[in-house]
Image (cartoon, rainbow, N blue to C red; front, top):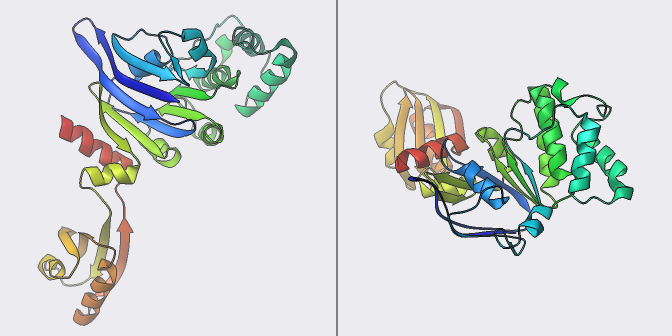
Length: 305
């Protein structure tokens, strides 16, 4: 679906995107992450044909973005961070306009507009002026215009920006549903959102690709794989040395008296239980944990910096 090779963008002396090469399949939900100024929005604008590239290539569904821009635009739905709305139009007028320029057949337009408005939670809002809408509802209209022509690729830049907590759940559910039958490229600063929605993550910084994979794969790449958290009712002394002697234990860190972070193989838990039993230590909790996406993000971006 998306193939880029050495995709590069310069703004004068500033290198915004630096030889970015990725391949993404025809369906699924891919998180596109990076710190502010990493080149995410610039990359998405090049993929949609909004910005020309300085060098390299980008191909969408087999069509080169530069050589076949109309073919690409027909296959892409794009929601920028600030939706491009006409404030003097009503919601219904705006979506009819978008449906027309997107090539939705005249006989299907009314049905498709109603269908999309229901999907994004705008049913009954046809007559409301866009200028009167809150930021959250403008965001919904922006999402509606992005999907009205039923494209195989959705590029969403901060799609949940401005939504209140009650609005987040249905929009996230919709994004997940949309990704079941097409490719969705999602950029957001809400890392928990990416962690719960996305199977694959692309992380860039300073225009270059830092990491590509699932949260678990990215964590392993920076040596932040799963660990066991052990909490004991035990003497205040540091028991790290005794724990480290167990077979399969790689590292032990005392976080506070009686609480330890232990890295090792999947057989560590029974050995820890046996050790505690032999010394009469009461185990309050023994839980295998994984690093959060935020921890992985900080480790990767911090290491790069």
